[in-house]
Figure 1: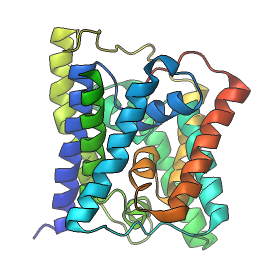
Figure 2 (figure 1 turned 120 degrees about the horizontal axis):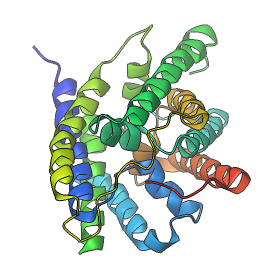
Figure 3 (figure 1 turned 90 degrees about the vertical axis):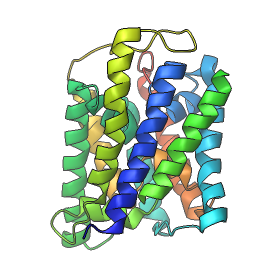
Length: 142
Length: 141
């Protein structure tokens, strides 16, 4: 018996990939969450600002509509502000330095057999596994 | 039309994130907890997401032009540099600490309360700060 979480994971994953395929083939753009947001907040993507805003509006609105219909799933997000701020800074700086995150390097990169995408994915996964071990099992802070 | 596609892509992306369970930080952290109570869900999400994109890239190779007219982006570089490795390393650490990557961090803004905004604010500040300090060249994505 396959756990339902895995099935929902696969269905949701197909939707994520479908969104990336739509954005690539119709709009001619790479669906990379950190790139779309980064270009908006740091001013480097000023000429495509409205497009970026609309994408993010959809990204925020759809989960709300889903939640109102089906019920909001828990985020289980920590309420420790120190961890939130440090984690946010690391994610923001890291994804801009590497020029991509789980969607750009992971979904769009791996599917193109991009060496950069695959290397980036191995690096953030490796760092994530190690960080989880250190912060959860050694230090017990998360 | 371009804006409609952006809206639809963003919405479908957000829907996929919430359906797949990737807006639940416990599931993401469970995936990264390789040496503890490991949760393999994320592998199904990533695997599922890659399937449509495999076809999309094959179509893109043939067409070269998107439906809306502009050319489909080709990789600027295949060079593995320090920024890629170091940046992804930083990202992985932050990802483990809170269980959020940039997509889900935005997807939970509508219902995740103040904590979601604190994380988002720090992430945006990190993005702005990085560019302000290092002024890297043109942004690819």
